[in-house]
Length: 558
Image (cartoon, rainbow, N blue to C red; front, side):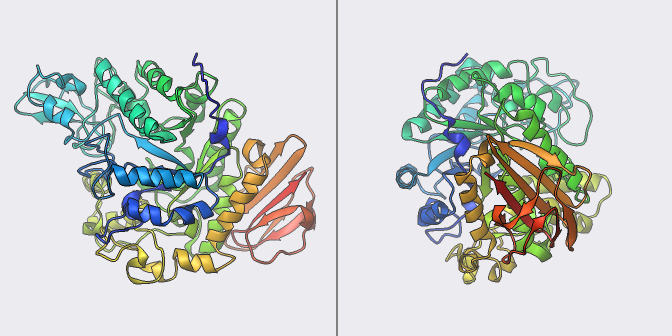
């Protein structure tokens, strides 16, 4: 069991703002978002009511996966600045009581990392065993595994007459975590940033770091064949405990990304004093309108969304901690997914209400707070992501035309979350004075930060109210959750209870007026109404009310 000397329970009461730096704001005019731009907007970030910033990778990288292929773990990508600038930003963030969380990507490195370059020179090279190199079988790869991002999971090296494993893109060779030297390198990286003053890590696909040592063939599926042999491998907990020992030395926290991990399995990682993670990012609630993690879209199912959120709330309560999010760099924009673009403001507020008054730590992704929407790309050549192009190849094998796939990609591509943040209605949405690295959504004249600031009833100003209510009322942090009307296809209603308090959260997913009757034990009263998503408040008394399109109401009894 770990012996923590420092109480890090503060992570339960914070809210986190997630920055994908390349598209946040350009401060030096080269068309690429950078740390200069983040510095410019620290006061804006603080004004939201958040308490921390999480950076997606800002390390040097050749960008085959936009930063998740790291070539130097102890530096800053020159596109974003340098270590001196980062230290200045860290200092300025801390001045504003904003903690800073870094992405830790150690399942794989970039193929441009010096370790990998050395590993290719010979089998005797001390870095050769830093990666997973195997001889082929029967004139082909060592097994039938497929990568998640880019075709087969094995890439041949003619010089060595061996294959290296890449569970993701070819430019992301998997580290051999069975080598104790590699684990020491990881610990050294962690201490480097924590000693600098960083407040924690989001650990990328961290449950993939242990592989089945026999490397058997996997079950044949179109994507990620073999994942059952490299997800939650035999030595995973051993390695995670080693890394946790480092975390226990600092006043910091760790949130884990663990694809294909359900609430029940999450408990073994996040519960108890000897937990290896403080919380885990769930993917379950992001499957309410898609199949295979955003690969193919399906009609939105509110029941499916409610089941997923309810499962994590009920199974983890009192045992572990939830990470609450609606958007990040890996998913399309939430209003375009689960809301309604015609009711952008109404559904944007409602979705935030639904998600962030449950027990857990909120994560808000850049642009989410101003109601940014999916882009509409006119041609596949406009896309830039390896995942988009890999999916295109898969769909083509099934006879799907590029024209049809373009429609699918415009709905499902994670690149929808990576268009530059829309700051104002001026040239390039105020993102840059240069040529933007990626196309800006043409709706920026109508949807931008400055316009949202001026409107007291905007999504942006509602996020501020919502986070303030959450911070001022512990029931929305520590409360016990209970869902009502589980079978409803139009309404998501749940209660929270904490000590002698109770709250009722009502969310309409309907684009028309709809009747609502309060569940047993609740009477609606304006005096108890602490949050509402429409500008005007109609009188509510008794048990019944007519909800307007995408309306959300929050009642609190103290």
